[in-house]
Image (cartoon, rainbow, N blue to C red; front, side, top):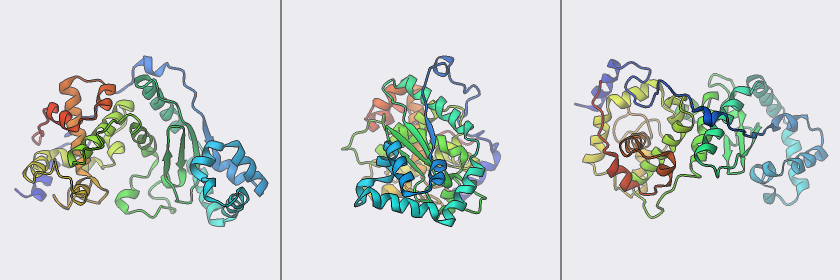
Length: 335
């Protein structure tokens, strides 16, 4: 049977993840996690930026927020601080940037929902990984230059990237990617980025399987930290795409096995299944891109379930081959 016909099977499934296995009925975090004390600082820096009037004001902001300055503005790339502040003033006076900021302030005037989500997520990370240091969070208007910067000390959110997909101002991204830049994706993107701090890998393992397991661990981490978040906002597939993937999981897996892809080391071949693309054309133009990441997530979930390992144990394990072998992974037949 051809893949296009197999994808038609997805119509049998309820489209709200009925074919999926990650949506939990009881997704609330334990009270022991939620009752932790946590100091989260969020600075709406774009407001202070557009309230500034002179180079002296920008010099003051540079000194006031050294973490943002070093991480985002990169003063080391400028001949002097005067050069940097002069450029900031020029950006500040640009009419299109001011108009963009006005739109951002309308959409993100109330940021309390995201602040609460971040606080809850950081509490969960801190609970499972006590060494986690809560980063300082800045919001900014980047002029569609940077969507997110996530380091161990600082997070910068380019709010202009996350205006609604129907908004007149949009980043220059392919449509399939631009649809993932919306308010509900902000916290999952941040949590997935933070997962890299704890995601141990074997740098000598350059196989497709190793990359699949890496992303599988990242997505499993994100789901464990923010369990009430829909898979859609973690992996960036639409509900229909998720249902279609589960309806065709047997076919997808057989393609990987029959073509002996798991131990492929050619970067070009690996990119076909892991890289950003509107579809995985090596399988079908109806199959969403990044299918290797989705498959890796399923393998990791099975490993955790079948081996009864904790989140900490999973993230510490650098052995992709072992995780795969002990997962007992088998694709689910379509419903």
